[in-house]
Image 1 (cartoon, one colour):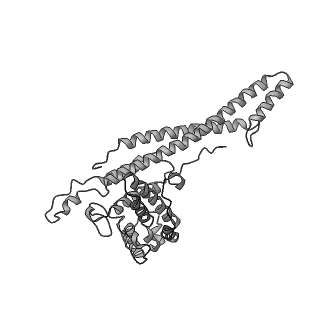
Image 2 (cartoon, rainbow, N blue to C red):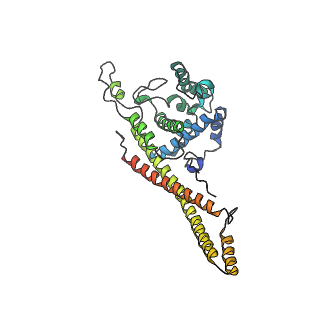
Image 3 (cartoon, helix red, strand yellow):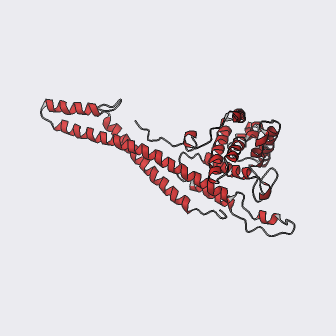
Length: 320
């Protein structure tokens, strides 16, 4: 019997197109074993998103593979962040936030001290830098932030928000995308300053690269399309089951109206042939109602996903 509450995990690796990383990269990935389960899952999510964002940015395959590994390792420094800070459910204090920020430089040091990890040190050190200079650990501006850092930042923000909100489906995901749009908006309130010089133009930028945010939107739309496909397959299967139950109802009605015992037996045998695993004449009506509820539930979800696509397509990203 189908589960009415069945959910779609849009971060499940079976649902995401990602590179099959070769043996030489397994060393880097094993480094994640020392992370707590939530941080490791986040690293995997971000890497999958980065891989697919890069494809929409038409990056070369070698860069995509490099950037994906950088993304896998971007939070490796959190292995040395105290659990009471890393796993704190509420808002961090200013002091705790300063401790949390050190995961970027710690991760960089981990990579630089290991010749096999050294090529991917950009992931840890740059993923919290912002185009307008408001990021950390160095407060770099756009011109000094490598492209891989800009890409990982967008994927990291998206996954952090969706994980915090505990999405089980893409319904209402447009609210999260709006946050990324806001982060990519230029800040026109920043005054021109001779003291800033060339940096004045960067200070007016948003935190995120709008072109990368736009690529993320395409990834999300792909995932929604896939979720609709999975849900529609589920609905199509439910339809077949509901037709079977309708046929049982017809046989049951004819059996109840039949006056001759042989006719009753005829329809009863037909019903038995139509009954599924653990279904009986006594419980099939209840099971039929559960299928009907599942069908309506999933049809409504599909309609909401189509509405979500419309909302996302109406969102505008300045500068993209």
